[in-house]
Amino acid sequence: MDNRGYYSQFGGAFLPEILAATFDELEKMFEDVKNDPGFWQAYEEIMSSYSCRPTPLTFAGNLTDHFGGAKIYIKREDLNHTGAHKANNVMGQGLLVQRMGKKRVIAETGAGQHGVATATMAARFGFDCTIYMGEVDVERQRPNVFWMERLGAAVCPVKDGTRILKDAINEAFRDWVSNMDTTHYVLGTACGPSPFPEMVTYFQSVIGTEARAQILKVEGQLPARVYACVGGGSNAMGLFSGFLDDPVELVGVEAGGKGLNSGKHASRLCAEDASIGVAQGYKTYFLQNSDGQMRETHSIAAGLDYVGVSPILSDLKESGKARFEAATDTEVVEALSLTIQKEGVIPALESAHAFVQAFKEAPQLSKDDIIIINQSGRGDKDIFTVADAFDDPGWKAFITRKAKQYNA
Image: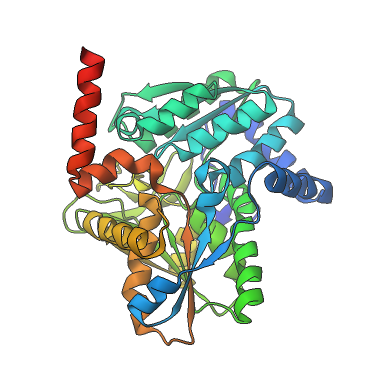
């Protein structure tokens, strides 16, 4: 990254003048903590005592035998506190908020995991908390909405636009403009204006640092490939950060939705209908039309249903340092089902995108090769969507009974 927040041609900070001073303060504070060993020590301490770091690296022996190729390991971010990698970023930003002396935090969320993590952090540090969430995502991620509210956060459904993640981000920025003296925006992914892409990657890099050390300890060699799903890009950047200087192939997997030719997907880095543009304060690949108007996106996974992508990942694509693929909704449900049955672990729908591509490629690799899949979150939040996709009769009967009880 250069001193203007760019990664090659991507990134930057396209801001209204009213936010300039707030971003200057944030950038200075972030530079200070990067140069303060005591800050990282405090971060590691809270992540080990309050969360679950280091998270395990699990050998998936049954899946390895099933595919007959490379050894498959799973980085278990689902075992992190609040059930996903999101805690890594929000606890780090929480420590920043303490240093800045602010008392209120706001956040956007799609899948709800970032919202739950932010609400948890706010409860831990004693901050007021408001979460913006698209109305569509409120409905499909109701369990996470329940927990955010129990944690004391105000959850604000966003009814503008397509009522998903990009609209929640827009609403959070509107709030911040009105309350910047008292409020910090805990952006949840490695997107947005500088310094957010670098800052979120900084806190998420703990994933890749751990995974690299763990695989060397267990196997004595580096993996051939590492896989992560890609929405905004925080879990991918977290894993990739540990291997950027190694001869390891970095594979990001986007939401292919109903197919890349269907117009119903959220793939920015491997779809022909994506192009470079500027929106929400930064420059990257967006799903947009020729007039720069954002297209509607679709994914079975709420956390991947976003119109843009990290400028760092865009740079890695252009430089050839990372490869990007897409997984369809149907493939995701099939990979999720297989993983549950073979290994007894339940990936989030977002994470299952990475499993799809890994399963396609593992049989092509040697048995001496190793791959790592980042299980960025756990799948219990997706119970409604997954049960519907499986067309589970027992679940339908349960929901019907509950509905009758509430309506009685």
